[in-house]
Structures are given as C-alpha cells and as structure tokens.
Image 1 (tube, helix red, strand yellow):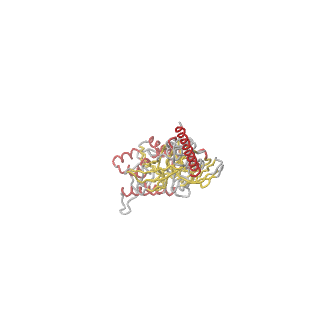
Image 2 (cartoon, rainbow, N blue to C red):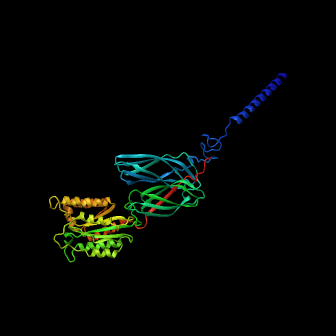
Image 3 (tube, one colour):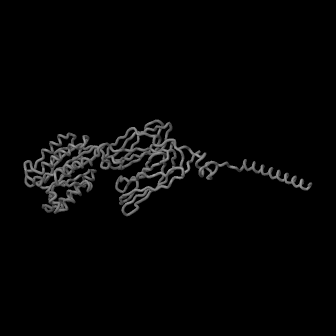
Amino acid sequence: MGRLWAFWRRLQYGTGFVFFWALIFAIVYMVYFYTPGNCFDGKMNGDERGIDCGGPCVRICAFDVPDPTVRWVRSFEIVPGRYNVVAYIENHDRVAATPRLEYVIELHDEQGLVTSVEGETILPPNSVYPVFEGPIFTGDRRPTEARIVFDKPEMWQPATAGREQFSVRERELFGADSSPRLEAYVYNNALTGARDVEVVATIFDLQGEPLTASRSVVDSFRPRSDERVVFTWPEPIAQTVRSCEVSSDVIIILDRSGSMAADGGDPPEPLESAKNAAVGFVQILQPNDQVGYLSYATTPTFPIEQTLTSDRNQVIRSIRSTRMGTDGIQYTNMGAAFNVALEELTSGRQRDDARKVIVFLTDGDVTRPVNPQTGLRDVEYAAQYARDAAQRAKDANVTIYTIGFGDFFLEISGILDRDVQLIKDLATDPSFYFEAPTIAELEKAYSEIAEDICEEGAAVIDIIPKTDANFVPLR
C-alpha cells in the first residue's frame, strides 16, 4: 500500500514538473516566436475560405467570383501597318474587382499569327470595360482577326463603385475628315478623387458594330468635378464613321457623252432620265451636306458647273441645264472629270469637318484622252489615266462611288469586261460600284449611296473611364 502511494506521489510531482516547464515554454513561444494567423501569411487559417481570402480577409476568393467574359475584340487600322486593338471584357460580379488582369492580344491573317502583345489592366466590378492596346505594328501584313486570351485573375478585392462613378456630360466630334478630335466632358460623381484614369472612346455604328477607338489618360480627377478629355486619331475617320453626325461634301459627276443620247428624243434619252435621277439624289442628301456638280464628255465642264453649296435649288438648276455638246462627236474622258472634281473638293469651299465624296456615273467605255505619244485613241492609256486620277482623289481621302448606267453600258460590258473592271477599280471599294441598266435601278443606286454616305441618326460614341480609386485596400 505504501509503495502504491509513493508511486502516485512521484507521478504527481512529475506531471507538475512537466506542466510547469510546458507552461514556461508556451509563454516564451507566445512572447517571442508566435505569429497569429492573418490574411497575408500564405496559409489557410482562421475562418478563411481559401488561402488569405474570404472570411475576415478583404481579399475575395477567386472561386467565389464568376469568370470574366469577352464581349468582343476588334483591331482598327490607324495607318497602314499600325493598329489599335480594343476588347470589351465583362465582369459579372457586383462587388469584386481585380487590380491585375493579365492578357495576351493576338492579331491573325490568312497565313496565321501576325503578332502578339502581352499586357495587364484593372477590371472594376459589375459592368463591361474596355481593354485597349496600341499601337501594334504589323509591317506589310493586314490582320483580319483579333483575339484576346487571359487567365482568371487570382487577386480579387471589393470595390465601392464601378462605371457609375463617372458620367459623360458632353461629347463632340471635330475634323473627322482631316484631323479627327473627339472632345468629351466627364464628371466624377464620387466624393474622392482619382489618379491616372484611363478613358477609352469607341465609336459604333447604329447596328452596334465598333468602327474605331482611341484612348486618353487623365492624370488627376478631382471629386465632384468635370474634366475635359480629348481623343485624337492620326488619320481621318469620316469614311469609317458613316454617321449623319458627320456632314459631307459631295460632287456628282454625270456622263453626257454621245451614247447618252442613244435612245433619241428631245430632250435626249437616257440623259434626261439620268438628270432626273441625279436631282432626286440631291433631294435625299442630308441638310448639312454641301453638293457640287459637273458633267463630262470629251472634256468636263470647266470651270465646274456647280461649286460646293448648301443651296439645293442651285444644284438642281445646274443639273437640269445640262445639254449634249454640239461641237462634234462627244467622247468619254473619265480621268479629266475626276481631276476637276478633286480640285473642287480641295478648294476653299470644302469643309475640314466634312467627309469628301464623289458619285460618278458613266454609260460607256473610256475613249479620251488620246495617247500624247501617238496622238491616237488608246483605250489602255485612257483607262490608266482615269485610274490615276481616281487614285489621286482616294489619296486625298475622297470616297468614290461609281455607277455603270444604261443598256449601252450592258452591251459593251458584255463584250468588254475591262470596262466593268475599270469602273469597279475607280470606286473606293468594289462594294461601292453599282450597275443600273434601267432608270428604276439608277434611282435605287442613288438611294443606296445616300444611305451609305451616312446612317440616319448619330453614331454611338461609348466613353468608359477605368480607375482603381474605389478598390478597397487590402490592409
């Protein structure tokens, strides 16, 4: 019995001894070595839902945030071999934002990858935000497709505001056909300022297709204040932004060569019907457009029959007064007509803010000018002369629509495919070429051209600022 009591006595002393030194060790450890779990220790501890995220942590766990999606991505040619790329990325989470969205933008053509660019941006919450990259240089290759690839961000944190932080109060587009400049006044609705605010302006057509884009950065945005933001483009965009918001300077060119009297009559047909169709075209152009007019045969009327003017009645009188020439055979000199039209479109009457347009009608093959080396008719020389003249207009940023008109045109085009090809070549693009064997189809062609010059209503200009000023700090 005594022995048992001694054993328990020794056990109690031993347990007390171990407990005492364990307590001392614990106190020393807690005082000198222990670091409590936190949201920055790279471990999942406490009430965290993931490593350093969720629960008491400000960081939001990536698995709790829906994947961002790509609405669309497009490349826009700024000058040959140089492109801007814009992607619209949608963040579906109402609160979560990421300060670092890494991406790769790729440009492709028919041969495959042209070039790729890596970058990173912020992604605020609860809306669509643009990713802008540019300029991207492609050399001699013309990309036909743009792609953006990004991994799901690992870093998410709350943000107190998204796109509602800013509102666009005014916007106006200047110099679309010369030195494009978009000016906007953006208001910061927040009670706090923001720095290094990236602002992207994208212009859409009425069908929602993006046409072009530019970017600007505001160094400092004061709270509850307006800032004037300016976007520029190095080349004219009037041809791209086909909106009635951009006015036009239009030259109508009408063929009055001998074949335009082939149907006979007094006044001669089909010239008279073509004049009436041209008058109808003038009447459906926009009120803010200027219109000029000239007719041509062996030579165009010089000086031009009607200089650029906003007086529609004056233009209509000039068209109605057009007569067949009486000084011998009336040939077809297309190139000279383009030269006169271009001279007027670059005169003091043109407007820097207006797009420049030529609407050219012919009913036959080109026959003038004669080859200066031989003094004889040379169809190939005359055709090249016309192409060169049209190209000079295109180089001056003039949009050219061409119309092959009448039965005579169809007769010769059925034999001489080169005439159809020539008139297509004179146009800015093959889609800007129209065949109109009848007056009804000519009127339809003029109507389609008027609609193509500008779309009814204003283009949609989307201006989106991005800032991390509302991201909740992690510490």
